[in-house]
Length: 154
Image 1 (cartoon, helix red, strand yellow):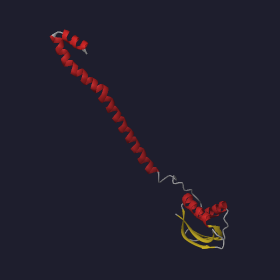
Image 2 (cartoon, one colour):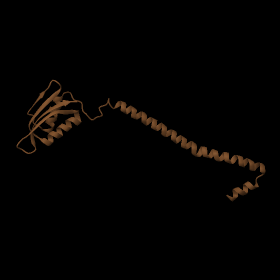
Image 3 (spheres, helix red, strand yellow):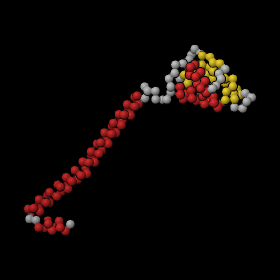
Image 4 (tube, helix red, strand yellow):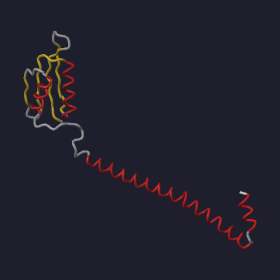
């Protein structure tokens, strides 16, 4: 710092005035080009990113109802889903009856209560098939029930 002061002291009066005028201008330019412009560019880039992300969110919201992203599988008939899923779970259907309004009644003479609830949850989660009516009666064996279930496709 002493060297700068000595250098300034050795200058002629006219040169001292130039340094006095030029110094604030140089400091101002340094602040502008070293701090303000980079920060401004960074803020501008972040705004562009936010704008792009907002557009992506809007696009995804528009596309969501059209896609089958809910995890529900499509199926041709309620009967085919019921028969195939009961076969997979190795359930014995006593009988089933299709209704005209798109519902199906399913009867089980003996079925594990827990496994039946698991099957019904799978039908709802995987296919969107819900129960509109359930009638359960117990049997002599613990955990085994007799059931009548009415299923409807939602």
